[in-house]
Amino acid sequence: MAGHSKWSNIQHRKGAQDKKRAKLFTKFGRELTIAAKEGGGDPDFNPRLRLAIERAKAGNMPKDILERAIKKGTGELEGVEYMEIRYEGYGPAGTAFIVDVVTDNKNRSASEVRMVFTRKGGNLGTDGAVAWMFKREGVITVKSDGIDPDEFMMAALEAGAEDVISEDGMFEVIADCGEFQNVLDNLKAAGYKYEEAEIEMNAENKMEITDLDTAKKVMALYEALEDLDDVQEVYSNFDFSDEILEQLDD
Image 1 (spheres, helix red, strand yellow):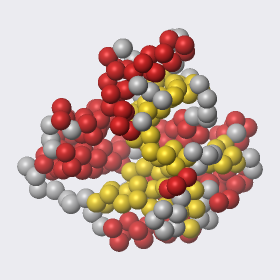
Image 2: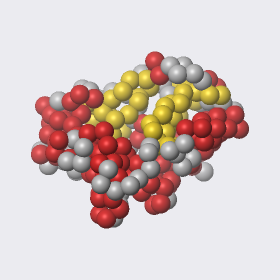
Image 3: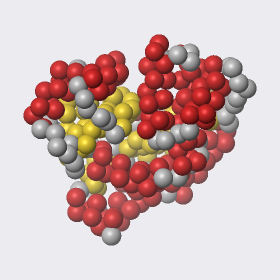
């Protein structure tokens, strides 16, 4: 088990934002609609939709809202025409950022994302500016309490995972995108319950931030981007030391 978990750097902060139920349900709904439009409304034949449904249910999204979002994607109900757009840019200290947006107005989204980068000490780049620094991977997180690390490692590898990271009370299972759904299904069949399961853009080389002032600026940009209504996910290559994390939490 090697590497540094995204969980300790970002996920505990995302948790506070995820309590904003309206924004979270909007995020789930857009993903459900897009997944259904892309691959149909039957989750048995649409892995993206199946995962979106599982995440929405785990987030306590009401069943009727969930079903309406799917029907908007299949055309059974009238809905907004969403577009998926990816923005790339640089933050303080040269940190790299990828911002995935789902929107019905690309001009609005571009303006809002650009404004946040500018106001928070970064700048919006062109397509491909930082994407080469990241690798698209499936990531599954499982609470490690009461689980033998060696047994879980073997189970994850047998399920088809590429690697397992153990940190901060969590196992983070890394899988190839093509094997992601199989790994998830195999882990569930083996009796393991996951906290998060998603396709992510993970930085292949992290940039460690050791200065508190810089860390605050980087985190301010990250959180401001996450707060935008059209933003689905924000990825970056920054990495905070335990000391910096403690100071940020004070």
